[in-house]
Length: 175
Image 1 (cartoon, one colour):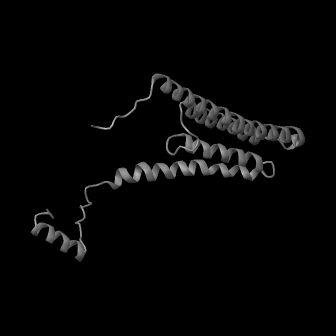
Image 2 (cartoon, helix red, strand yellow; image 1 turned 90 degrees about the vertical axis):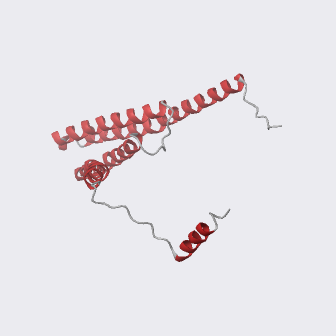
Image 3 (cartoon, rainbow, N blue to C red; image 1 turned 120 degrees about the vertical axis):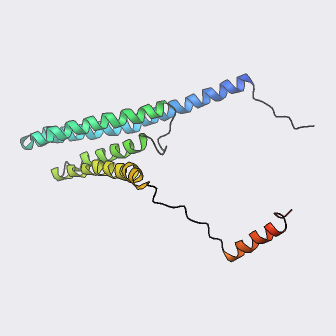
């Protein structure tokens, strides 16, 4: 007799689906709590210190980078949040959530240390440099480097492998 396989009942399937939905909701809630709180704290600290304590040194440069940072926070947070809501994980590799996480963490770090020196904002140059690097290595080089000049390499066998292959051919493939 063939072995029987017990299929889950409808109630068990519904319970598994509910459990997966609860895990997804918990991941989204944890992300909102941790990352949303961190973004709010860093933005509030920056605004308080720059607007409040160092108002006399406020320049248009600060307005531009502060606005760009807010836009970056919002964009990255929205992309990651959407990824989590669709069932993804924060640790997932590939897609947009990974670089957005990196950019979000870099923004938080840069905005915090820029309270010490305005030159720290230049750390954000890493983002377009990495984007160009990924574009060149992922698209340009494979596109132009995939010419027909490459010939398939012949398979080279070691002496032992060659002997085994000859023996297999001689005796009909080892039957």
